[in-house]
Amino acid sequence: MKKWQIPRFINTDKAPAYGRALALLKREGRCPSDVEHRQIKYRNNVIECDHGKLKRIIGATLGFKSMKTAYATIKGIEVMRALRKGRLSILLW
Image (cartoon, rainbow, N blue to C red; front, top):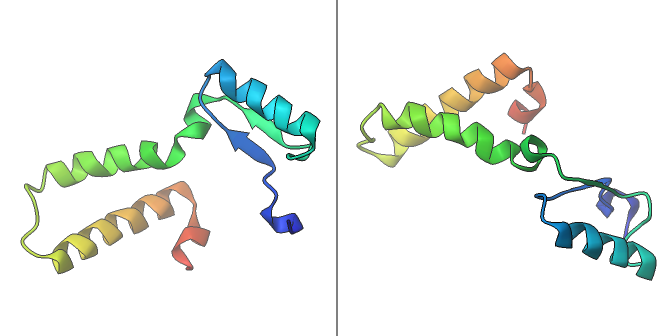
């Protein structure tokens, strides 16, 4: 594996099996020993957390008539939310 392919963190839920499995992988040498296991709920579900708010906004519009208007509306909402959160790097791709 290349250095940029190795994760620094592994985010999971709080199921105890994940911690044991990761410890086993580290002992066997399949996972680097400096990989940190995080079981923090909000870090595990950042993307779905953001989309929940988007779903509420879209629900108020009562649907879209075409794919073009749906795309433009959702893209505009995402841009405004990214600007508000200071995530300008997301907009540059």
